[in-house]
Structure formats: C-alpha cells, structure tokens
Length: 150
Image (tube, rainbow, N blue to C red):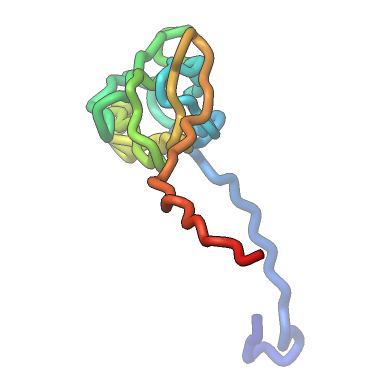
C-alpha cells in the first residue's frame, strides 16, 4: 500500500481469512465408468457432512432421468449423511450425464446438485448370464465364378 506519510511511503498489509463452507461432500460427483447396459452396477456412495453452516436437513428433490435411483441415509442427525446412487437396467447405450438434486436445509445454499456419469457401451447382449459382444453381419456379395481358359 502506498501512503502520503513521508515516514511510511509504502506499507505491506497482510490479511488472513478462513473460508466457510456450509457442507462438504466426497466425492463431488458419481462416476460409474463403463457399465453393462443389462446389469445393475454396484451403488456408489457420496458422504455429505455439515461444514460451517447450519445443521443439514437433506431431502432428495429429484433425479435427472429415468433409471437413476437415489437414497439418503442419515448417519448422524443434522451432521452426516450418505447418499447412495444406483442405476437400473435397461440402460441406453452412450454417455450418461445426469444429476441428483438435493435440498440442504441451509439458507445460503438451499439446493445442491451431484453429477452422475457413466459410459454404456453399445453392441452388448446378455445371453446365458454372460455379457458377450454382438457381432453385426452385413449381407455379403455373391462370389463371381469366372471361366478359366486352359
């Protein structure tokens, strides 16, 4: 900082701060990675704990799409919760990018959104309890037989 004081033309100021967070969650998002479209993957857990805000009063508002199942378990009232997120088959092939929206009960952050991600490969079929790749065949051209001159 500069000043018009002749004895102290320049001063260095230091500021310390503590960042307050209303709640913490770990992990921040749920990633199922690659999922077989015909089987139910193991549910993923997200721990949500009270931070510096008011006590938590969590409630699931809704999920982003059909096939996502979410359940809240209160571990320690107002302090700690566990969110279990699962997927139910059949799942469309491609990338799944969705979310679970939760009310927090905290005035500063009334809702939070947790991202849900998965990759569902195409070309899989469940036969005899084992997932096997489906081989797609195309119509082949008929061979042409040419006469051979001797």
